[in-house]
Amino acid sequence: HKAPIIFITPEPYIGHFGIGGLRNSKRFMEDEFAKRDIKVIANTSVEEIVSDEVRLKDGLKIPYKLAMFAPAMKGVSAVAHLGNPRGFIPVDDKCRHTKHKNIFAVGVAIAIAPPEQTPVPTGVPKTGYMTVKMAKTAAYSIASEISGNTAPSSYEMDVLCLMDMGNTAAFMKAYPLLPPRQESLFKGGIHYKWLKIAFEKYFLWKIKHGLSNLP
Image 1 (cartoon, rainbow, N blue to C red):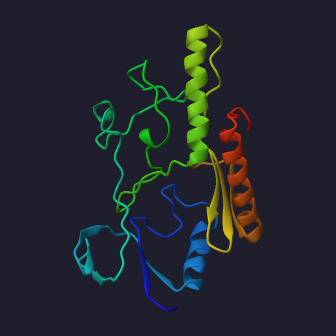
Image 2 (cartoon, one colour):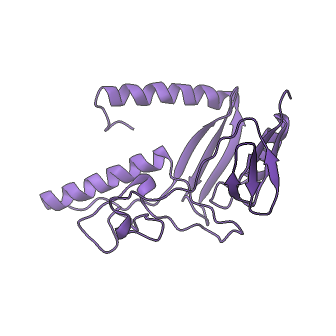
Image 3 (cartoon, rainbow, N blue to C red):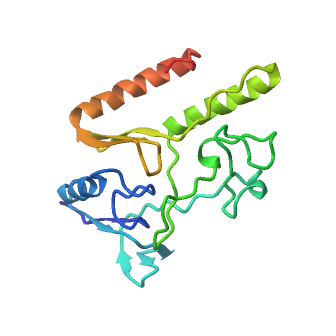
């Protein structure tokens, strides 16, 4: 209420998240942004940033005093030539490269095809939760090859996310990650803020003590 804030996103609508939305995520995010007097400009991309204004592809020019910009991501340069045009690595459900069987990739490095074509291209998010599960799948796959034991079960990407929103938070759940889904949930509340704080303390504690095998 003291300064105008504008959020610019390539998503076709706020709450799309690159996964086609999740239940009531569109209405939920619109309401949360409205409560904070944040204007949303969706379905567009940035053409240029100069010293005093942001210029969008559609010709709109937005003056600013402070701007934060997150550029489109690319894959890891060392292995980008093994991936798609953006440098992301195509993998199977064991996190193994689809062509080079001695290469595994997890997390942001992998390629995930978007569930739908959008007017402005969007990427599928890769959360820490997903990355941990991918890393375990890859590690167990490598270990099974070395030991000759039975390979682990495949990983079908899903997501659990606690989204911090200042004084409150939201809980997102999707299984599988992309539609059609068997489970989907999107809710907000102060108790999710407490849960996020508790999870952060637990996660840092288990990593600090080398207990990565815990849930």
